[in-house]
Length: 390
Image (cartoon, rainbow, N blue to C red; front, side, top):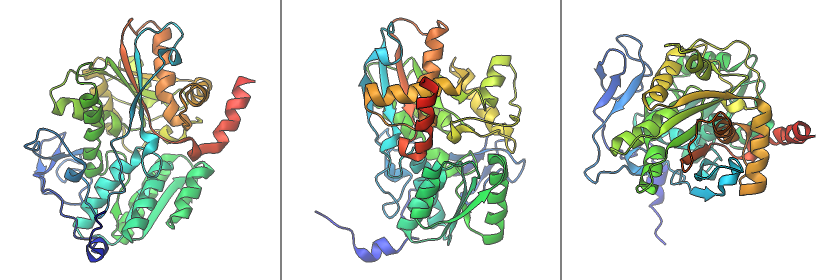
């Protein structure tokens, strides 16, 4: 067994990441130097990391995450399950991308590991995250490992399981009244006051979003001889949709139809898709059991617009499903696939069931459902499963 030098592990600012060309604005095209910049300094647009594909032709974790930061995130299983899990008459191939296997139990570890690596490289002394729970747990986890302080801001409705994780890792925790938009604003204020890096996992931190292309690459490379027809993605503002899109585009693979799966209780992107609108409108009064995607996009509807454009570009769809369908999907994932999911994670399966019922799936289609978070994140939701099925 080879163990790194202890002094190197303690030197959290020496992260040895590959350089990037800078940050490209998706609105005006301005290229800014790589820095802790959250929006375009010229027009306020969303920023994307500009970088060259490795000579090897594929991305590796080390292209985004330093050895001193990683906890082994990524490379999660893509598992074939019985197609009857989607519907008794479904004759295609059903696969689950199991992101519950990440260190803190959700796909958010991928974004956080990458954004924290860049932040430490730039010499920050602490980190902040506004979160509905999973990103906060990830930031608290990675900050504890790196030995730096973390401040987490979550809505007052955040499930106790996620709050317990944040507390266990020792982060400073703020519970903010109201929906996620207020937590987002509070995070921005605290980042300005403290000078800490803001690792909020919307499109705000481009370095975290950039690392999600690994999700698309993992699916594309695993199914090189059978490109999926559909990839269903639980969607809040949509960085994971962006990551799947980028991962397939990077490899010139046939692009699957991307499904932005949302709850009917908070569905700004799905609503815009259904109405044919070009722009997303903020959702009023979000109420859903799927706390991880309960984001009204009140502070940054332009992020929803970007996600909507990616979905449409693939011939995909934004779709909203009732909480009752999400709870049934949770139960079925556990009892028929041995996968313990929180409500948000199960939304991807609930969405594909709805699309099958609507006649949108063809015989023989290959479907990938991304299960984004572990069931331990929200034990209370499992009580609602019993009530919904009684």
